[in-house]
Image 1 (spheres, rainbow, N blue to C red):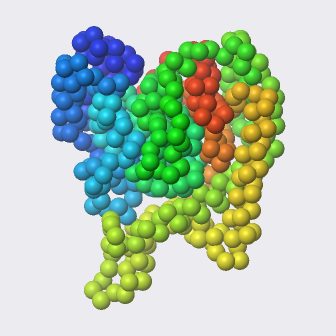
Image 2: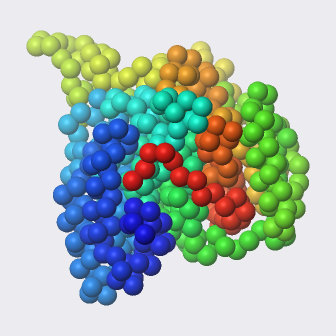
Image 3: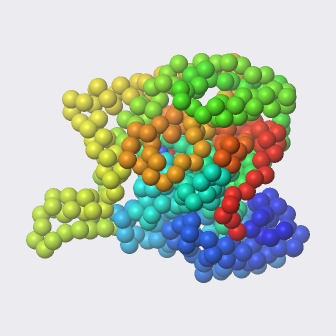
Amino acid sequence: MRPTDLTIAEGLAALERRELSALEWTRACLEAIERLNPRLNAFITVTAEQAIAAARASDARRARGEAGPLEGVPLAIKDLFCTEGVRTTAASRMLEGFVPPYESTVTAQLKRDGAVFLGKANLDEFAMGSSNLTSAFGGVENPWKRADAPELRLVPGGSSGGSAAAVAARLAPGATGTDTGGSIRQPAAFCGIAGIKPTYGRCSRYGIVAFASSLDQAGPFARTVEDCAILLRSMSGHDPKDSTSADRPVPDFRAAVSRGVKGLRIGVPREYRVEGMPAEIEALWRQGLAWLRDAGAEIVEISLPHTRHALPTYYVVAPAEASSNLARYDGVRYGLRVAQQGDHLRALYEATRAEGFGREVQRRILIGTYVLSAGYYDAYYLKAQKVRALIARDFAEAWKTVDAIVTPTAPSAAFAEGEKQDDPVAMYLNDIFTVTANLAGLPGISVPAGLDAKGLPLGLQVIGRPFDEEGVLAVGGAIERAAGFRAAPEVRA
Ligand code: GLN
């Protein structure tokens, strides 16, 4: 087997048996990146030299008997995680020239456990988007092709589009992402791989460029649910540097994947049957439920009545927090500075922010400052906070009768570049099934479950109780086993 085809679990086993070295695995990934990244644009920065050095050091540790749980595993890192000494862009011009003097907690933990970083993956600017097209470094090409129109460039989803495309195209066996309203789960679905957003507080947010702090969570991408579990374990854990980080033990997520679903009650929310959803997605959803029933689960219809307000609520709360978080980019402290000789401070702010931020980011800042402004605060922001509490309460009610909830991940398969680009609302609608988990802080996974008639992957989403990633992984694992999804994209190493 070629190293680029290995899953993380397979690669770790091969390393253990000395059939593969970290250096060989890393080199195979770097060669694939060199060949395919000019086309896919999945990486903004490739750190080949550092990766080779890290792989050598990893092999030496293994030889000394000091192998960590991720010893020698090459990974792509979403370019929203600060990496010490390595340029971090958030896919924005605003951070031009920014080289963090510190490491995010999540990436520090991955390194501690032996992972090797290949580079920084492309994303929507400041993680705002569902297509990766808002990146200042250009869009990412989805490695999958539509059978009826193979010449079309499809989007990989967003915001973690580079991470998902890199894993799907076998440039890396795993990657990190962040998910504020679906940015791990939707790109995972569009690229035919798995991705999990854990419970809010499970992974530290320290050192992740902030978008909407009450919604942002880090999580992994990989080609299998088991690999996601392996990565999530290293990424999780309490961090005193993040006051919202949960002080809870980190379970053995990997063991949960094969636990099965016998006796579990799986909820199907009535309100997720949205109008205009392709029949194929509806059919796959029903198929997924049938698989779980065959595996011993009980399917229960439930109601999450406030779901219909979830998108408007999200698109008030997230921009509000973003406008506040992004106030720090003022041309004074770091990143881009645009100023003419003799400019006043205010002119410096205006010129820097006008040039540094792309259109979507500016739109979010405008919405956010508007809903937070005097006179509108009560009508929009406060109202959204109240509805958010109701959405969370719907889930709390549901957990009295079900153990997990299964829905489609997104209302469509990957769309083509340009398709929804001129209509922000059409783009926002893509997040309809994913934002609720962020608003309620719940764990959610997307698992590749089938192909549509045009040969594009579709994902199913499993949402679980707070801190029950194990339950989510167990149901995700059962769907994965039943689906037997083996298809691979057109463009791959
Ligand atoms: N697509 C959503 C947005 O544009 C979610 C992004 C994310 O999860 N970072 O806000």
